Length: 402
View 1: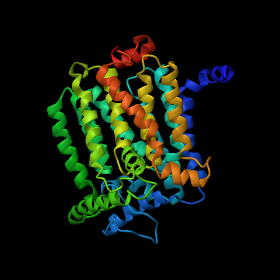
View 2: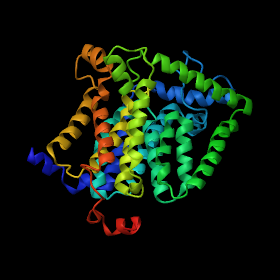
View 3: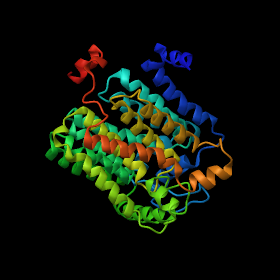
């Protein structure tokens, strides 16, 4: 065991160029390995052409793909540069883009590299699963992180952009608002969000028409409402705290609000430490909590969504006062391992489908870590008071003003 640990302590494994290479290689392998264009990418690229033709982008198109489009109308513009390319090239560049947006979001976090490079290995556990299915979850996580970075740097104009873009792509991107209290220019941030909301609302009109876009927003809300109902019995969805509780206790008809509201109360409790609003440790904790919340309290959570939870897990671990403590390290390893095996086919299909998926068991360790994190932020127990300035290189100190 010691020889394995020593092997991974070699400088190459913490080298920025090496990690960038790996995070670029993973989506390339995923795209090249796929024997066919993934269904999700067909849905994404198809939405662009349906918007051009001004036909309902939320209607089923069984001749083109199975399942339906559930993203905001603005997504039809975002996918456009990729949809215009040949499918093989388009999906390759799309997967690489989804990987690198999260890579650079984490890279620019104001945390010393000697602490931060481990993030890429923790998150990388789910990266392959995410890009193999051409999912956007890495992008959503990157936008939330990006808004945090911009607020820290007092670039509220761009923070508002990332918050609104995440919201207009997927509604749960709105969790970026959890960082609002850390802004030193709250009035400006509100104004900027209104401006960006107007821009992203109107942007799809550049490839369609105003009337079609307005109708599309109505269709989007109806589609999401219908999908929320379908997720109750679709065991590939609602892999969340909501699904875990409803399925384990056989209360499928229970409103998700019975679970979401207590979750919101716990989340709100974290803000009682007003004096800590300017503290980086506290801010990173809230950021991690918000990312966990996206996954744990959305009925649309699926196995690919857990790249967001793994990102939150990495942030949580970086805050621990005693990271080598057996229970802290054990919980980290167990969460990574459990998240991995519940998405794999190591176990027989009967166990994978009838146990793990049926009861949303994948959510258990992430829910446990989130509850621990909430407790730590409220009580300030078990987490560092501040990041050690000695962790930073001279260049990092200058960059972060330490």
